[in-house]
Length: 472
Ligand SMILES: *[C@@H]1O[C@H](CO)[C@@H](O)[C@H](O)[C@H]1NC(C)=O
Ligand SMILES: *[C@@H]1O[C@H](CO)[C@@H](O)[C@H](O)[C@H]1NC(C)=O
Ligand SMILES: *[C@@H]1O[C@H](CO)[C@@H](O)[C@H](O)[C@H]1NC(C)=O
Ligand SMILES: *[C@@H]1O[C@H](CO)[C@@H](O)[C@H](O)[C@H]1NC(C)=O
Ligand SMILES: *[C@@H]1O[C@H](CO)[C@@H](O)[C@H](O)[C@H]1NC(C)=O
Ligand SMILES: *[C@@H]1O[C@H](CO)[C@@H](O)[C@H](O)[C@H]1NC(C)=O
Ligand SMILES: *[C@@H]1O[C@H](CO)[C@@H](O)[C@H](O)[C@H]1NC(C)=O
Ligand SMILES: *[C@@H]1O[C@H](CO)[C@@H](O)[C@H](O)[C@H]1NC(C)=O
Ligand SMILES: *[C@@H]1O[C@H](CO)[C@@H](O)[C@H](O)[C@H]1NC(C)=O
Ligand SMILES: *[C@@H]1O[C@H](CO)[C@@H](O)[C@H](O)[C@H]1NC(C)=O
Image 1: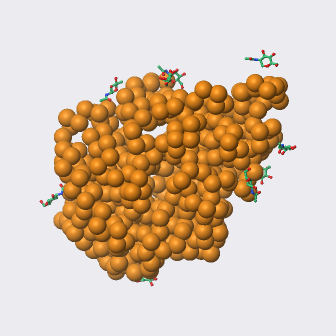
Image 2: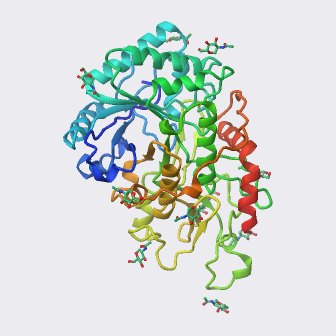
Image 3: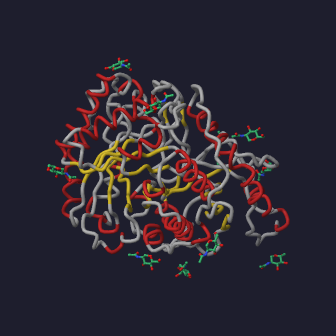
């Protein structure tokens, strides 16, 4: 069904004795159920997380985005949040495994981009909200969940391209959460939301702070964002996969949500255990000044083929048509494990000998040139995860949430962020007020990501240009 987004399950370690998690109140992983054959529950590093979220509760029947598996039929009925057959078997096992591990708790989330088609209408009237709340509390009881994570992409902002949408979405989302929180069944449940890097659009500035009273935290998803680095055009015009701009985006996302009224202590940083590739030919990939045979100096932000992503790792797909009728090709995504398997990275995340690698100081992320595939890959490694952890701790955020658990099966990235020291120089000091983004109009997903890019650029561009282009 549709619905919302995804259902993730949360496994919560009650015992604060879980040493690995002690630096964060929320060390969260999203577990992608469709990767269970490669990531069996028995392989999950439960003890390193405080919460584990099972994705998703509501799945669709068509391919919607490259990360989502779609295997049930969309519906417009708010009474029918349901699970695909496979999830009906796996989810209880997941909850049991979580609970067995030092009292991990289980929760659920509604789906992301592709599953948000009817979110708005599901919450569009008081009776629909009541039906929806009932569906959620039924799930909590049926599956013994401890957490429900809402992943609506996006309230008041077009996501996929054919979502129902309303200017009342933010208010309706809040009203539903208040009703859910008031239910005895959900009163002691951890309620969270995965969000965009900009606050929910609203004309009533008193609405956003109220989310902090009903949600335990929000998790801005600071990934799948990148520059348009077409030569000579350093604008951030396009939010694509991955990012040379992640660190500054993390900073601006936190600043924007805090300015809108969510306290630092209720923000969890969404972090990716995967990267994105860009088709860049071997001539363009290396600096002209080092264009001899042994050259390994990579060109920062080289031109790339914006129309063609070569398929990434085996979890990527050749694409398909979403429920809006839009065709998507491969995403070009590379999970951390796959970069190791392909020989581009060593097991500890360092670039393998001979692999052209560069650290991007602007975003605090690395990139490498995958010569066999003809792609430049922007990804995360232990160094960038350490930087993210240092940022989270320096700013008193609740923690981090990683998409997805299976991307880092050995916990290499996880260990880096868990053991990151706080770094006071990354603390956000009060800065000029951040302009709130205007509510966008309808459009395709591509248009949405471009809009998000423009919002970001409206308050980030100068900073980014100053920092990044001075490197050239
Ligand atoms: C309430 O849900 C029904 C589907 O069950 C939908 O047809 C209707 O448009 C929704 N109402 C609003 C105001 O969105
Ligand atoms: C919430 O309270 C109910 C009733 O006391 C209890 O059964 C359930 O385990 C509690 N859930 C959580 C997550 O604490
Ligand atoms: C804004 O929302 C608050 C709380 O819901 C409400 O009390 C107030 O009247 C609203 N203001 C406007 C101008 O709608
Ligand atoms: C990148 O910027 C160039 C120059 O402004 C523009 O022509 C191109 O369409 C942009 N590409 C994307 C993917 O936004
Ligand atoms: C790489 O791209 C540049 C410009 O886009 C082009 O001039 C060059 O011929 C290409 N090289 C190869 C090996 O395809
Ligand atoms: C790379 O090759 C150039 C030209 O052949 C040579 O001058 C330079 O010393 C080489 N650099 C390294 C690090 O081997
Ligand atoms: C896309 O790029 C790949 C790798 O560079 C290439 O093999 C393929 O032919 C390209 N496809 C199109 C349609 O340009
Ligand atoms: C990763 O492992 C390689 C090979 O053992 C080693 O040379 C390198 O120093 C390690 N990297 C880090 C960051 O520890
Ligand atoms: C907590 O962070 C410190 C660095 O500040 C690190 O040395 C320690 O290992 C971390 N604790 C855990 C359990 O990872
Ligand atoms: C703290 O962060 C700053 C800014 O990124 C960096 O220059 C510095 O090296 C970091 N310090 C440590 C100890 O990592």
